[in-house]
Length: 156
Image (cartoon, helix red, strand yellow):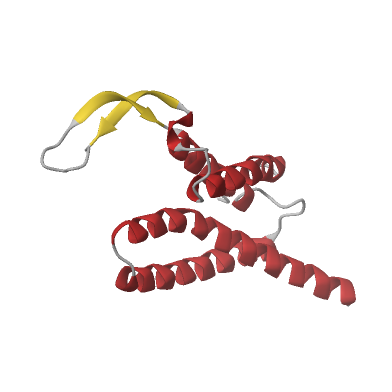
């Protein structure tokens, strides 16, 4: 029984259309631009406020631009990473799997190094970056291997 967990091919284009503006917005949010988290504000359930002296869950009006940007970045990267190629076969499936394992290894090493050498808010910021970088490393590796494969097939 063959199971297919890939999205339709058109999802890659949709993913890129979401990813590029969200990446630019995310960069603007990080580099002290006038765009801040309070640009989009609404009431949401807030769980565990700092300081963590007691468990708290309450409804508060809070800025949500950072959260929306991160969620859309993750969704778009997922769509790009797991959209079918125009011609999907066993070899491309193999490239996908090897790229995913490679990305996981790189991500693990980077997280271990950052755990040992970064602390405080820098560490927390890097963990947010690592949520995105796993997909980015996978996509870069997969597209590179696919490009190499097609180039070598074209030369033969």
